[in-house]
Length: 231
Image 1 (tube, rainbow, N blue to C red):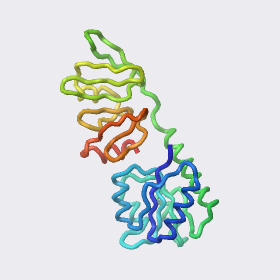
Image 2 (cartoon, rainbow, N blue to C red; image 1 turned 90 degrees about the horizontal axis):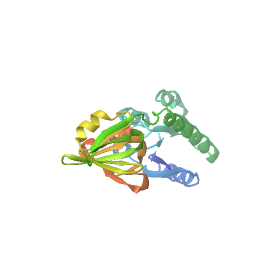
Image 3 (cartoon, rainbow, N blue to C red; image 1 turned 30 degrees about the vertical axis):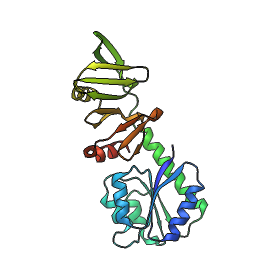
Image 4 (cartoon, helix red, strand yellow; image 1 turned 135 degrees about the vertical axis):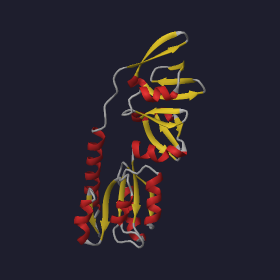
């Protein structure tokens, strides 16, 4: 999966150079390139971003202050012509600090640091859940391995549990299942849907995309929580 990148710089040339470097680097994709830091904040609050390339000295809102305003911080590489901000940048947990003009080799070095940090963060995620969920389906009790559950859809008093091997329809409350399943691995994203966190591949607008292109709607009221939890 490509890393989703947001580029923020008030100089057109700087944005164009970053876009060229990213186009020449496998595994990266540009979600947006912004001259306005205010627009960048809007994107960061509404879109999953893996890697942020951020200038420091910009009108209205500096790059460092921008990073302070957002609660869900992506891995960040600062790009600036001013070396005096380096200490402040690293205090904000920036993964690297690129001084303009920087070469493609130096850019690649920074991206490799970012990828290493993202791999470390992903490896710290919880493993597969253990145990079984017991439900009554078609007048029989059925044991479902929790690790096999992909998502659950509710419809009135019934729910359908979609697993890697089958789908099970049961007379059950989605609220009860939400309270029963481990919150470390499952998330309620809509009044009618619970998803397994590790099955989510990306977010497209207000839709989560799972394996095999299964698309799950996200309630507008839950979108910020879903973004901060999953991305």
